Amino acid sequence: MIKAIGLTKTFEKKTALDAVNFEIENGCIYGLIGSNGSGKSTLMRIIAGVYMPDGGALLIDGAPVFNDPERKAQVAFLGDTPHFLSQSNLKEMAAFYRKMYTSFDESVYRRLLAAFPLDETARIATMSKGMQRQAALILAVATCPKYLLLDEAFDGLDVVMRQVLKNILIEGMEERGMTTVIASHNIRELEDLCDHVCLLHNGELKFNDTTDRLKGKLHKVQVAFAEMPPPEAFADLDVLKCERTGMLLQMVVRGYRDEIMAICNRLSPLFAECIEPSLEELFIYELEVAGYDAKSLTE
Image (cartoon, rainbow, N blue to C red; front, side, top):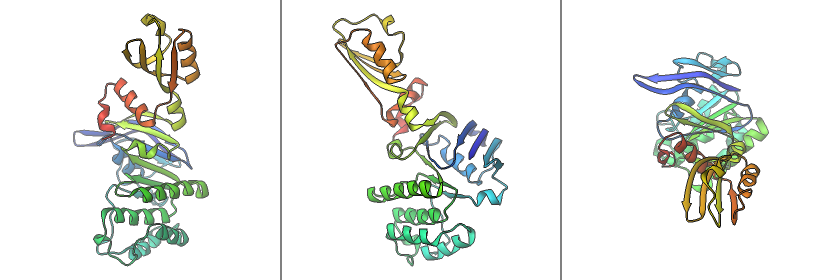
């Protein structure tokens, strides 16, 4: 388990993480989302033991990770910009990883090399950005870590390779109990992959729950009336946003579908429907309610 307790990190006058608390259970795919500068990369580097917290604690399996080589050996971290040994090729980097990680699995490495068609002997520096990320992914996953940290995992990958990566992560979770943490500002990419998602904004943790529970707590509602009820008729609904066009109301409502529809139907509408929002819509609505500019979340 990965656990943050009052986790704080500052850089000069900038607070990158502000008293963050969360838990990541073993054997899950955890989405860490937020706009640029929200603190995602800083948090990933603290989990990997690259940065030391300025306050609070980051625990892996109950112990701080920063000065613990044994804990660090259980973590494979792929940052937003992969790094390789100078003038190296993938074959040489694999040899280096075998020495660094006792968990490195040759069969997994060969299977990944077949899935990502790269030339083992080509200098990595001459590869495209997407091919370099593929090389880094092969090395990270082949270590068979207990915890795999991916910062902007899908950056530079085409559509086919993105699906290959998703399949690899799901397989690692199901077959080896691997926990994957993916930091991204692209919510659409994570919606059908992650079973748990949290949102960072300005260094603060705003939301943290399973994907199903998050999506089940917020709904888009359209309801039409022959005669519009007075505002107090909707007092039992937790309305986050409401727009009226004639006798049609379009609302964003916090709550469960059956409860929302029961309240709406009491008002004898001509038409009423309740639609579950996408994960992207959910976070945009919640950020708007919190007073933040949500446009940067998906840019």
